[in-house]
Amino acid sequence: MLTLQWKQVDFEAGEVRLEPGTTKNDEGRTLPFAVLPELEAMLRRQRERTDALQKATGRIIPWVFHHNGEPIREYRRSWLSATKAAGLQGKIPHDFRRTAVRNLERASVPRSVAMKLVGHKTESIYRRYAIAARQDLVDGLRRLAEYHAGLDKAPAEKKVVEFKEAAQ
Image (tube, rainbow, N blue to C red):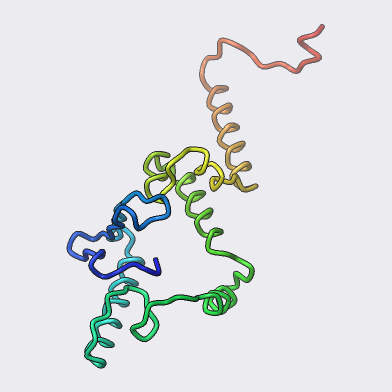
C-alpha cells in the first residue's frame, strides 16, 4: 500500500486496481472498496487531505499514503504508536492479514474469492493464514451439535448408542 497511487483509485467505480507486477505475487487484482463504507470514507478523507496539501504546496502528490507529500519509506514508529493507541501492542501487519483470512472464512466467502482478495496464489499459502482460533473450534462443534439435534427431530434410520451398550 505504500506505493499505491491515486491513478489506481477509481471513486466512480468504487475500486482500487493493483496492476500486474506491483503486488507480492505479481498478479493484478481489483478491490471493490465501495461495499465497505468505512474504507470508502477513509479513502475519500485521504483524497481531501491530499488535495488540500497539493493546493497549499502547488505540487502534485501521486501517492495515496504519504507524509507531507513525500512517499512513506519507514513506518515502524508510526505502527508502534498506532497499535499502542488501539490497545494492540505487539501486533505486526501480517497479523491483520491472518485476521482478514479468518474473517473471510467465518463469513463463508468462497475460498477462490478469498484467495483473490488477499492475493494468495496457492491453497497452501492461504491455509498458512487460515488459522483456526479456539472460538472457531467452539463454533464448529456448536454447529455439529445443532446438526445432530436436527437429526433427532427427524425420523432416524440409525440410532447412536454408547459403545458399552453396543458391545453387549
